[in-house]
Each structure stands twice: as structure tokens, then as C-alpha cells.
Image (cartoon, rainbow, N blue to C red; front, side, top):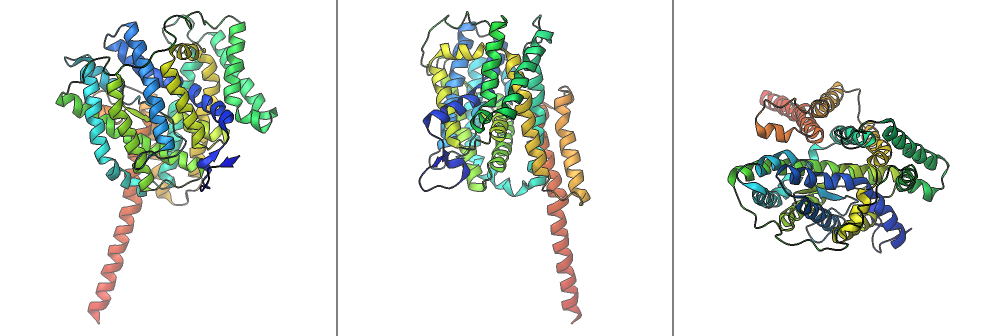
Length: 453
């Protein structure tokens, strides 16, 4: 492996064009379902037709690719320069549906995303200053819950992806996922170093081939429609701006900043490089700049994808140029709808079989981080116990916060943001306040001694 001249950090390794695109394709396959789900859900909910939803998905792939390139390659003040994949954030799905089904319509969603992204762009440097409140006891909790919160996604994929389909949870779906998982395990056990690193991609390819031979794949619609199309600017009309919608999306923006900060810290921990305040600020600015551009192509707020953090951990490929290659593939998918339709034809049980290992690896990385924590200190034990328990609430029961105000529901809808908020506040309460009290006590003792003399 060669390195970019003048750099020695693990993320700056360059593996060559061929390997970069091969490993980059793994990242695309890992997050493809996640990046197309929000536009599909929101577009259907607000009444867009099939053609419009198709354009919405294409735009999401295109902008996600551009956002990934900005985040990984970076320019001055923008881009964390770590292996982070960007795409449409799931955090705002419920809020956007609420905005879109009101009198504002789809244009109000786009306006709210743009306005909140501009606010996020302004506050990003100040938000990054909280990095000192993210020691291993906090980051370990967050990384662990990222993995745990993604496992239900893998299980839904295993069962078929659509709970209204007649084959939901069928033995065929479970068997296909199990076969993919078995292939991944065998390749990881008996393969060479190169094969082990490509085990996720190889298991998906072989699993898809196995499914095709058994008649579980339908590629008939791949050639239906245009082969190449450039996403249109303002295809859905000019964004409109409504204050209630903007306020609601600003809450989503705070959640997005929180989750992206957690993902930056998680991937920096896995890569083994420092994520200081300046670097986090650059990453958050890239997030918000991409989010501000997205509405003009008809898509939504961008954020880092947690599932790809797991891929970095499981493959050991830490190069940001690999993820940049994945970003280029996303751009290509956005320009070539036929390729997007081909990837979309991969059976979800195949993705689920690989996802079980992939997402579980994220949780394992969090446990490894927590191993650095001194659990002889009861306060650290309490921080971890309460933070992870709180993060499991929205994972176990999505209706837990249903009677709370909308802003509370938005803020705590995600186990990741819930764990992050709770862990940070508990860490401040137990560790930083304790230091201040100790310092005050020492000062008082010193003053008493001085006055006695």
C-alpha cells in the first residue's frame, strides 16, 4: 500500500484505483438501502407519483455521492477527511412527512431543510467545542448503541424488508440470509487477507447469485426506463419557507449534528487517529453545506452513515480514498438509473445476512472502547448503564415518547442521539462537576490556611 505523499495517518493510505473502487463498492452496497429508504418513504407519504419518487431517489444518490466526496477529500474548512459515507438522514423522516402532509407541501420540506442547514452551518464550529465532553465512557456508549440500533434494520432485511409482503419472515428469506452469513463466515475463516477484506462484498455477490439460481431475484425491471439521466435542479419547484416547518427541521438538524459528531468520533477511534475540535467542525460544516445544496436537487438533509463505520471496523480498510471511491460510485448511480435499479434488485435477505455481522461489529467496537474505562469507579458504571438503557428505549418501543411534545419526540426518536445526550450530560454531572467541587474545596482550604496566618 502506498501513502499520499506528506501524510502518515492511517486514513491517508492509498490502495490504488482498482482496490479503492472494489472496497468502495462494499460501502455503497452496505448503505444503499438506507439512502433510498427516506426519499421512498417521504415521497410516498406526500403523494408523489412513481416517476417523481424515482427522480427523488436518483437525486439522493447523486447528492449523497457529492457529499461523501466533500467529506472524505475535503477543502479548506469543509470535510473531516476520514472514511465517512454521507447520505440522506433518517432523523427527519417523521418531521418531513408532517410538514409535507400539511398545507406547506413538498416545497415546504425543501425550504425547511435549506433554512435549517444554513443555521447548522453557522453553529457548527460552536457545536464542535463539545468534543471535550466525549471521553471513552461517552464514545464507547455511543458506538455500542450505533451497532445495537442498526441490528433491527438487519433483521428486517433478513425477513424480507417489507412486512406487508406475503413472504415476510418466510423460511426462504431466512435461509437466504443464513446462506449469505455462512459464506461470509467461511470467507473470513479460510480466505486470504485480500479475500477476507472483501468478504462482505463477496458474500453479497455470491448470495445474490445463489438467490438468482433459486429464482428469488427479479432483474426484469432493470432495463425498464432511461439508462442515463442528470438530476434536474429545482425539479420539484422553488423551496418555500414556513417558520413552524423551519423550527421543526432545526431540531432535526441538532439531532443530525449530534449523530454526525458521534460517527466522526466512532470512526476516528476505529481508524486510530485524532478527531479534534477543528476536524469535527470541518466535518459538521461539510454535513450542513451538503444539506443546504440538497433541496435544490429535490432531496433532503445529509448525515454520516453509521453502518459504514462498521464496515471500516470489520474490513480494517481505513483509507478515506476508498470511501471517496464509494462516493464516486454513488454519483455514477445518480447519473445512471439503470445501475441503481440493478443494485436495488439485490434481495434484502442477502443484505441482511451480511448486515448481522456488519452492524454487530460496530457494537463490538464500542465495547472495545468501553474497555478503556475504569469501571472500578462506580460513576462510570452508572453512566454506561443509564446511557445505553436510555438509548435502547426508542429501539425497543418507538411509541415511548408519543405523549411528549413534538420536539422531544424528534430529539429522542433515535437511540443514537438519546444515548449521546444522556451520556454527555451524565459525564458532565459525575466528572466535570466533581472536579469543580474539588477545586472549590481546595481553594477554600487554602484560603482558610492563609487567613489563619
